[in-house]
Structure formats: C-alpha cells, structure tokens
Length: 145
Image (cartoon, rainbow, N blue to C red; front, top):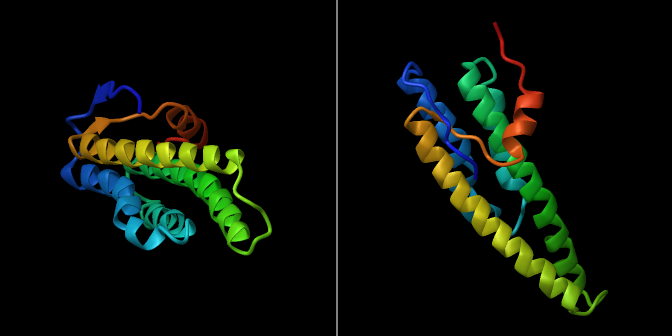
C-alpha cells in the first residue's frame, strides 16, 4: 500500500464506483479462487476489458488491480503446483516449502487488505497508488487525450 496522495473531487460517481469495483473483483471471487489461482486474474482481466473505454481514472485502477492479481497468480501458482507434487509424493515437505507457504500466506493477507483499502479509497475518489504497482501502472497506462 502506498500513500493516497491525490483526491479528485471532479471524478464522477460512476467512475469512482467502477475504479473501486476493479479491486473488488478479486475479493468477490476469492471463494472460488482458493483452489485455482487463475480465477481472480481472469475476473480482474475481464472487468478491465469491459471498462477499456472508461475514464483514465478507471483504466488506471483496473490496470493496477490487474498487475497485483498477476503477481498473486504467479506466487500462488507455484505454491499450488508444489503442493500438488507433494500430494503425489514427488517431493517431501521441506523447510523451503514451509517458508514459501508462510511467505505467500503473508503476501496474500497483505494483498487482500491492500485491495480492500484501495477499493474504499477509490470509491471516495482518492487516486490510491500501491508501492511498485503504481509506478508500473504509470509506465503501462498511457492517458488518452
């Protein structure tokens, strides 16, 4: 999470709601995504595509949400695959596995909390930037005139 540095009162209610919903896509689908890490990523991607003609505010937040979900997808997929291999006795439980699982649990909790905070802040019209993802979103998201 990073600083909510800007407040845009001129952003209309619909755009604030759409930007907020871009973060909520992953929270809504978390019950479905627990066994399959790709569900949250797909839901966030579909929402972003559906809003590709929206305002820069909405597109920016859809992109930031998608980037965070992509990172989460990668680390959760590794844990998922590693766990499946453990279940089929290809590997044994090691300190590395336990450390990785504890780390991704912490990251998942952080990402969940950051998502809820970002959804609340964008709903208020605050341009909420996450550490790392905000700068990456700036690099990828070109504002339309």
